[in-house]
Image (cartoon, rainbow, N blue to C red; front, side, top):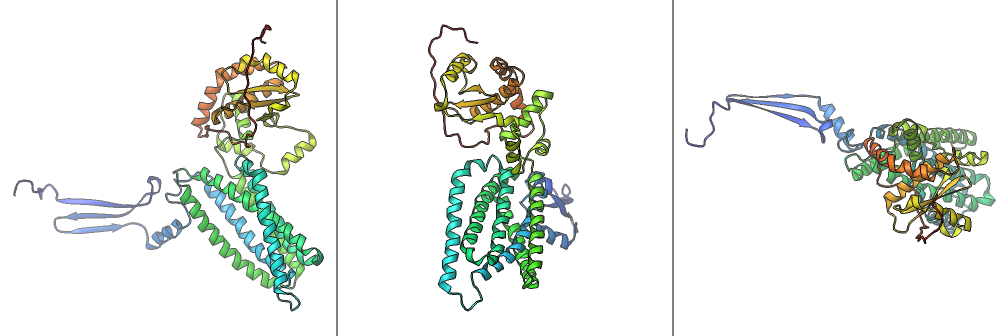
Length: 441
């Protein structure tokens, strides 16, 4: 045997295993090959149908599933697909009614008339989408759960308008435009909240893959819904009562499925209410709740806020007003700020307690972490104000002693502490202090 050649006796046999899967959590052994000097044996695991099923599933779930997504992904997508299916079934009923209302299939209808009505409908929707994005765009990220529900409710309202259109021929254009306006809100809110949820699900920085597979799931739901919707439209044609019963039943199921989908989400980002819930638990028990525990305490129904306002009941985070406008300060406010200035010497914000609420003024050079810190400071001050009138010193002491620990525990539980999901802070401030002969309290 020449120098450098392998020793045949040392390599009498070799075994190679084949593993399939795209991530460590999803790998499974599919084959084992063993070779000796005289033979080769091969053992395969799993059925051919099982491998085909895995490939089909791979077209609808992200690569590396389930290890590449958060635990709440499956429950959310299940309910989301069901609500989508009901939407497309109802869409066939409402579209059939709308087309009948504008004269499709009737000899007296003109092409130019139907085209003009459809143009007004689309134009109203486009303008409505622009206005909605202008007024609410910055709030969609912070309250993704609530706006997800609102988006689908507005879609239900738009479909209802389409179904009503044949009943009021004299007001057809108005009803069509109102329906289009409702759906335009749906498009903006649904698209924006979907982007936020995709980022939440992406454990492996795979937002693009999740978004693509979401598109595949929605396409499958669309095709199924269209097929079932066409069948239902054909069966119920000419039976208005049956159409309305079917539509309303599917709408109720749609709203229920949407609520269950949103309820299943356990977001790890910090908005006003989640931050308030977490801080309350930490100040009471020195513990930080998990995202799943916080999710159970969140208020996600949009009418809840209106109902509380009617009863004049405020949650803790509603007592804190972030990004207050400096031009609204009165002389007494300015004097109070001067008295409490020592507590905010090294902060890019200052707090003003007024009429039971805390107003936060943000410095023009403040960054995202300053905004989060100011809001937590405001929550602490609002909580202490319920016990005593002058509590800036206590709140300042709590922030010095507990804030870093609180943030560290939030990070350990998986929360994103880089920023607070808030409305756009338009108003900021800059301040200077002069000498004072009075002792700072």
